Image (cartoon, rainbow, N blue to C red; front, side, top):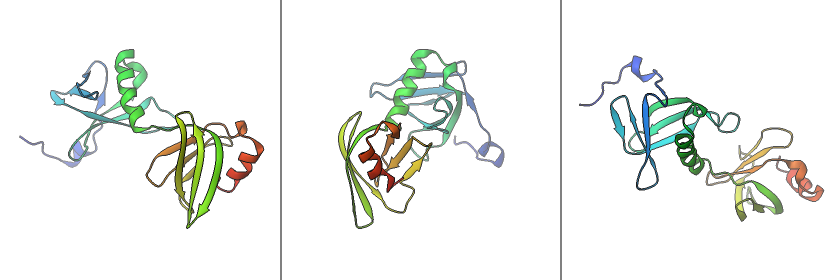
Length: 173
């Protein structure tokens, strides 16, 4: 029997805690959830504040269909370490953000910029669109780039770059 959607239950936030839910790793390496008498064979996890508060207000969603929210984890630090680590592993897959450690070049062409850089995950090349929200300055020294495919790259501390690299980056930040 399908659930009847009403205005009241559409806007109701259900909080998931270590006491009212069970999380288990699946054979495929994902996470299943048992919550309020329902079993979800695979769940997705989305941070409400991915950069400023990564362990609070984590939305737990169905992995298929309309990706409806199952509930909200208010604070991941209130879960046993093994469960919190299992959930963080899933979150890290979604929020994979290599840290840029060296800038080799930044080349403009046709309204885009191609960056060639070293990251903590290896050397890579990515492309951003000019005049878009592709560059977000989080502080005087921290920057997030979002490429044309939606991948994120981070400069954690701009002051650790050479003056030459900083000068190249000044055009985009």
